[in-house]
Image (tube, rainbow, N blue to C red; front, side):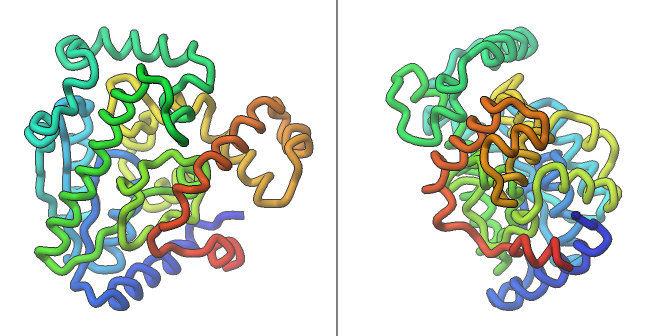
Length: 299
């Protein structure tokens, strides 16, 4: 069982040790206004004090509340921030031309259409699950490049600031995202230290409550904030609670049928998660420094 009270000092010491080991003077992280970055921001502050910089990296298609929530996190935990708008870079690269302009001009309508369209797509045609391996469908290549370049640009800017300050880059990816491939290779996985990569998403929420993450962030649906209307659970096709139960079953060495029976989850969903794990294996071969799960669970 995960214990937030025991985890915090372990994670804090881990961050301190790795920053020292890498001979860095502090750490930088992207603060998105979501729960993962809020948790890492809190842990970083406890570990490094004033030697933490939070970067707020909005762009044209970001949710209007993202910057507001990111600033709320920084204010709550006393972290210095800088804001860098990625829109001009994305415009120059041509990223916005890869999707219909209506996403930007009529955001509310676009959100509704995207939610409905995405919810009825079969798993093998959803951009996330289909994109874990090569994307053969030309229709999906543009949107795939459109959202992945945003993650990779975020990391470019994070490292730009980090190297100017001799800081390490802290990642905010969790265990659920790593095991299912719900991250961008050489994007949000390209960091020096990953303090919460050992925690499932449901555990991150437990930790967030313990750390005092503001309620507006805890109450909103997790989202990569890349495409209007797309939330994490919509992209993956099931709730985090369900995914985490399935992943835990595999961690315990149970078979697909045993997991389905034990958790009262359809075998189809168990197989879908297993497929995500298999198809994203190549993405986990070069990941940043992170706590081992056994270090956390057995503490």
